Image (tube, rainbow, N blue to C red; front, side, top):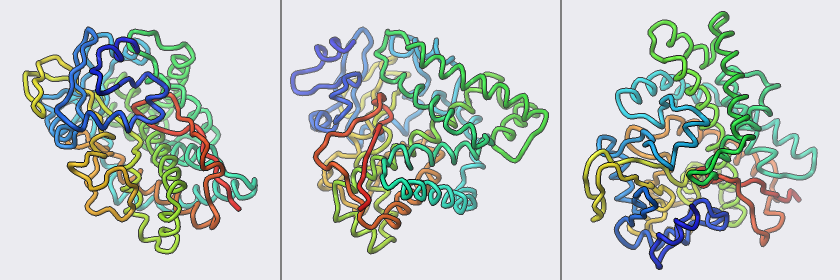
Length: 406
């Protein structure tokens, strides 16, 4: 598969999300894609690389022409076999997507998130306390990994003693993105998914008998009372909420702290004017967002950015490239926490706009703000050292980020 991607590509660009070096820094590879119409690759399955801001937005807002349902074929068969094919909010179109999103939307309103803010701050403070006692700070292990999984687990009604197991399962399942199409999913990843589904299968039975104020109980009630969810949909729904609810925010915190570590003036500015944090979070999302790309399939013949797209063709929608499009952003390669306006698409657009955006923004602000407030001398421990990323191209996140406290 890797060879096919490399040889199919034109000489002026390279696109291979299964190449570790490409994943480490894909941004230089986006520049040729931003200079012209979407390119089409043919690997036995044709798909367009949609990178320019206007083109990406056109695809994301047109759910009638560009479906979110994974097509049958080499790109997705192994994932479907390993993880099942029940629809989720991310992998469905209306009316299914509308029905699924409505069920959870009340738990992710800005008002509901504000109500939870004191609890989020307590969690962040405790994690920072632990790092301070240790005298060393791996942003990922000490803050970015545990905070989001603890928050989403509380929303789902998961007890604290299960948090680490959930994170381990989540990390393994995300690694499936690094399996080249057509190759089998490794057994350890399948086992993680099986373990996670088994846990929630038992929990669903328990919440049906003894419902609580948590989101799982609410979804179980919706399933029982109105058949709003099938049994498979209910299980997939809960699993998706855990994965999407923690991994993307983890990456926002980690990528954001790395950007601040590499831009000490921005870190100092936020310390002196905490009100800059809101704009800083938006710039972190634009500059090195937690989601690099998503995928759509054309349902009919159309044209995007001057490129003919035929029915059945896929579209690799590269959100991170759009967020560095010079046609949309002045000096897009510069990290600028005062950038205004900043109409990034890190949370997507259209009907699939991230339902957890208010939660992610709040968690990111609280976590990063707590670290900057507690550690006045915070800086990268080894500024010139290369950083390492986890296996997924689609969900871009660091595996480790060491920062000095003194």
